[in-house]
Structure formats: structure tokens, C-alpha cells
Amino acid sequence: MFHRFKMTGAILALTASGALAQQTDITIGMQLEPPNLDPTGGAAAAIDEVVYANVFEGLTRFASDGSVVPGLAETWEISEDGLTYTFSLRDGVMFHDGSSFTAEDVVFSLDRARAEDTTNAQAALFAGIESVEAVDDTTVVLRLSAQNGALLFNLAWGDAVIVAPESAGTNATDPVGTGPFVFADWVQGDRVELTRNPDYWGEAPALEAATFRFISDPNAAFAALMAGDVDAFPVFPAPETLGQFEADPRFSVIVGSTEGETILAMNNQSAPLDDVRVRQAISHAINRQDIIDGAMFGYGTPIGTHFAPHHPDYVDLTGQSAFDPETARALLAEAGVSDLTLRLALPPPSYARRGGEIIAAQLREVGIETEISNLEWAQWLEQVFRGKDFDLTIVSHTEPMDIGIYARPDYYFQYDNPGFQDLMNTLTLTADPAERSELLRSAQEMIADDYVNGYLFQLAKTGVANANIEGLWENSPTQANDLSGVRWRQ
Image 1 (cartoon, rainbow, N blue to C red):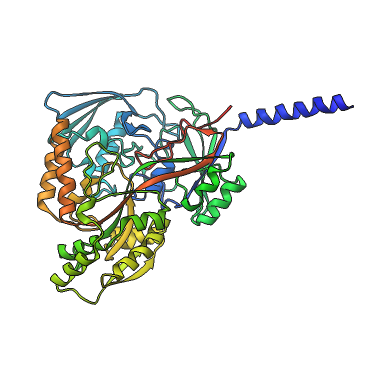
Image 2 (cartoon, helix red, strand yellow; image 1 turned 90 degrees about the vertical axis):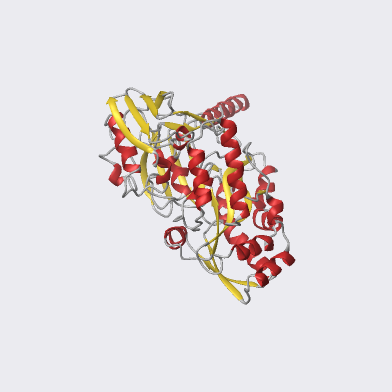
């Protein structure tokens, strides 16, 4: 009887081990729920975090190291004058509704993105496209009005994914793409469910199903991981608890970098913030390290401009807006500003809510009071991002290499500098890498000189995952949770 029991126990152990090795579903935690699921029709990073590279694909895409690699375009050729791009598309690709992907879908998607009435949040990415022509089902010719050294990079954004005319109108709630996962369900306020695409053109993902659960409260996120209700939280909202996970062999703590420039954005058209001396005063009133320590528990890299420190063209300009309350007070006096109260609108992420309280205290020390309003994400998008109804706000810009937003006078912080706009136009027309690097350095210096915003820190990617999961991105070269290479260890 004893030997029989031992054999049975061994069989049970093997069965359990096999069951673990065969796990093919995953639950991913996210703090913010996307307002919709169409990356071509919304600015929220949470949209891409669910659907980029999972449901939707573009002609090109970002790899985990930030490089631009082929997507739905297998290869491409660029004319000698740099004005014509000929894309050879992958053959046999199907949308999730069973319709075929062809060059006509590329024409539709890019024409739609660059149309005058476009709802694309990054329409500027497509501004230099003069025409898009389908030569045959697998060949697209894209002509530019002027050279654009960043075109392939731009086409890798989530805003540039390819959609079909038959389903484009309903992608916000029922997304139909060509990616390795198919949209299955969205229980608003709770989760989005995806299943493996059996007809995917590329290598089949190891996962058969994925669920994105939305957990806004950091304490609830911690509890969900500890209980095993969530398998991974790629951007974990409670960095103060990472030490507990590091000490627990059930988990892996994955700390990397992101493209997220976290800023105290200022409304440059709202008096007295339209005075550079007031913006400069606010910048000098900020102690970045206190914000990193207090809001992010030490995770984050100080920045002095809108550019990622891990990029080779980054210029460290933090000294230009160093913490100096005395200078801040002198600048306010020079500008004739006293008894100033500014509205500080804070979206839900903990870096904003926690950081906002710290910044409010720092501003108070130089004579600036703040009226804090905590906004839900949809409200922040409507009031601040679209309505421009704010004085100050804190947000992390997680789009890759997005310094070009400062060339848009109607962007939410409303910076209007023709010199910067000319600089960005020159950058677009420049292909030489050394010349592009010099222009990017000049751009960083120009917005720092104008104290457009208060530059706080580069958001760290602090993730926690079950130790048996592999393939999650360590860094975030774009706002994505690419599950195509994720698997459970054997």
C-alpha cells in the first residue's frame, strides 16, 4: 500500500508539472482601461497597450529593442530622391473577419489617417504623404511631397495600423485586425479578452488566450498578483511594494525603461503661463528627485527636456531648470506675479496623483497656490487634452520619439514657436543621421530654453510577473504589451 501511494503521488506530481507546462492562457493587469479599442481613433496609451501587435498591425512595427522591423510590409524600396517608397506586402494575410488583406486596405487606412476630417490623434505623422497607390494586391507605392527620414518609424506607430473599410467604423468596440490575437469580449470596467488567431500569417503565438484586467487601485493590484488572479502586471502601479515581490521566488520583477517623458504640462496660452518667466519660475520650484522618491519610490530618471535619456541623441539639460526656489521667487517678482493660484488637473496614474501633491507643496514654497482636481481618464482626455481647459497637469507621454508634438500649436499645452516648427520641418526633410542628431539636440535645447513644460522624469517600466512567464518586454520602446512571443516556461 505504501509503494502504491508513492507511485500515485509521483503520477500526481508529474500530472501537475505537465499541467503547468501546458498552461496557454495569461491574465495581464493594467491600471487604466482604454476608452476605446481603436488605435487610429484615440490618444490614450491604454489602447495600444491592449491591441498593438496583438490585434492590429502596421506596415512596419517596433521590436522589443526599439528597432523598426517589417510588419505587413515584407520588404520596401526607396527611390534615390527619397520621395517614393514601394512596399511589397505579405501575401495570404487575412483580417479576423475572414476578409483578405490587400493593398487597397493600405490605401484606405493611410488616406483615412491623413484626411482633413481625420480622427487620428497623430495625424501629423502622415502630413507629408502626397499619394498612396495600390499597384496590385501586394504592392503599394507611397509618394511624399518632401523627404521624410522618419517615415518607416512613423508607420510603426499604433496610429498607423492597417484597418479594413468594412470594419473601421466599429473598431472602437469590436476591433478587427490582422494580428496574432482575435478580439473576443470587452466587459467594460473589468477586462478585455483575446483569443489566438488560427489563421495568423506569421508564427503562431504560444498563448491560446489572453485577458487584460483593469485594476486602478494599487493595493488591489498588489492583492491580485499575490492571489494569482493576475499573472503579470507589466507596468505595476505600486513601486513601493516591489521589494516584497523581489523577495518572493514566485515572481520576477522586471525593471526597464520606457518612452514616457513625465512632465508638468503648462497651458502656454493661459495667462500668466504665457510669460516664459512664470514657466521658468515653476520649473525652478520643482525638486525632481523629491518627486521621483515620493511618487515613484526612487524609480525614474530626471529629465530636463522632452527626450528619452536612453536615446543616443539625448542632451542632459536638467541643470538649466535645477531646483532653485530663490530664483523662482525672483522670476515671479520680475514678472509682476503675486497671489497666484493655478488649476492642477491630475489624471488617475499614481505618478500623477502622488506627484501632484508633492508639486503643489513645492509651488506653495515659492508663493504659488494650486487647486487640485482629480480627473478620471476619459474626463482628462475631454477637458485637458481636447478642451485645453487647465493650467497645469501631470502626464507621461509614452509615444516613441515624440518631440514633434511641440511643433503643433493646437496641441494641448499650446506651444506656438515658428522657429521650432521650422526646425521640425527641416528634421523631416533630413535623412543624414549626423544631421538629424544635431537637429534633435537643437530641438531639445529650444524647448528647454522656452521652459514650455516642467520636465520631471523618464518613467521607469516597473513590472511584476509570475516567474514562470517569459517573453514579456523588459523595456517599452512603444506603449504596448506585445504577447506574440510570451509563453509559460516548460
